[in-house]
Image 1 (tube, rainbow, N blue to C red):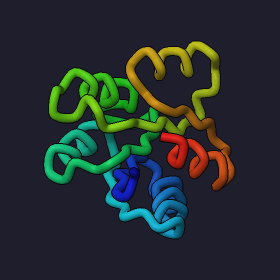
Image 2: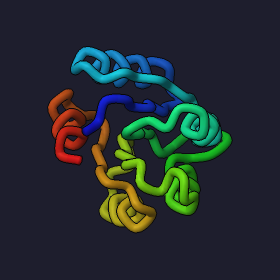
Image 3: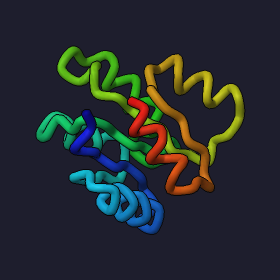
Amino acid sequence: MVRTILAVDDNPSDLGRIEKLLAGAGYQVSTANNGQAALDAVRRSKPDCIVMDVNMPVMDGFAATRALRNDPSTKDIPVVLVTAKDQKADKAWGQLLGAKGYVTKPYTDADVLNVIRGL
């Protein structure tokens, strides 16, 4: 069961929206603003789920998802990618890297919550 979620996005307004949505749905939310910061946060707090953008500086969401899957201590934490990248190839790549969900921007609150609840 998902109780704690790490939200990752480099855009402050997008991060604020997802944080407010998840907190409003009863989840305990922490945040990071790029993939490397997400990896650091995951090692500290082991969230139940990660909701992550793809296009970010320092380390993008695809690379962070790959790093999480390749680490035995984080490989079982589900990652949901929430991104403007809406091509079939992007979705397929996300799944190949191990993402458990893929939501394209713009999204509705229900789009995100339904994926998380389905984990």
